[in-house]
Structure formats: structure tokens, C-alpha cells
Image (cartoon, rainbow, N blue to C red; front, side, top):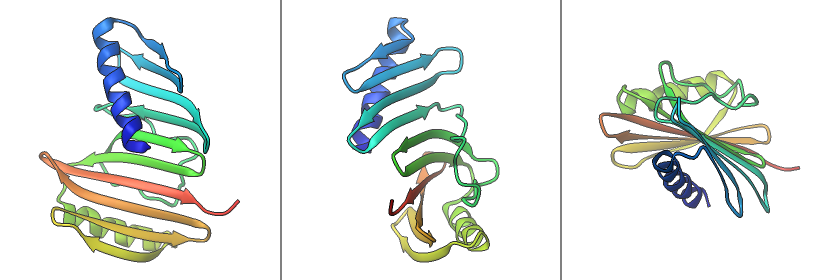
Length: 159
């Protein structure tokens, strides 16, 4: 679902910039393009609830309700945010090495009361999962171009 939404958002944003329009209605929702900032926003509904995706290479704001106990790496550019139901996903970009970023998330999540559940090395990237109460957080840290991509996913379990 998320990859499909991201691909649709990228395609629509490219078309929107090229066609001169700033808003498109689709069967699933609406895409808005802010030409001054290059920011693209998709809002729609699914069986799991409302969906909102905001993206820009130059940076977007974190959702207002992003958990304060999930650290954001110093100097990171938030390039995409997505919320759907009880899940929030953010993509960040930094210039530091993968190993440094992963260690930061291991240490900072622990210091915020998260219990690290697992870590996995995946070649040029790594993943860790953590739990705190009825919430889960995963951090995927991977080499990307000349920098490092961080994908944080926070999910509220239960009702």
C-alpha cells in the first residue's frame, strides 16, 4: 500500500509541476502541489482510516502529533511524512554514516524508555525495532546516494 501510494504521489507531483495545476482530485483523494516550496501533499481515505502524505526533497514539517519520545537525528531533513490510522511514518536524510545513525537510535530510544526488541544488519543498512507500552517503533537506516536515509515507523497497537 505505502509503496503504491508513494509511486502515485511521485507521478502526480511530476505531472502537476509540468501541467501548471496545483490541485488534483483522484478517486481516492486529493493531491496538492505547492509550487513555491515544491511540497506535494496527498490526502485520502482507506478502509484503515484517513491517509495524509506530505513530501519534498527540501523538507517538510513533522506531523503535529509525532511522538516526542521518538528522537529525530540532529541535522536531519524530513523529506516525507505519512499518517494512516494508528501508524506514522517519516523519511529523513542525513550525511552521517549508517553505523553512527544506528547507534544514535539505539542509545536515544533506550534513553526515552523504549525497549530494543531486535536489530538486524542488512548489508549497507540496518534495522532496529523497539517497544514502549502499546507502541512499536522501527528505524531503518540505509546508505542512500551520498548520505543516509532514516525511515521511522511508529505504530499504536490495540484499540
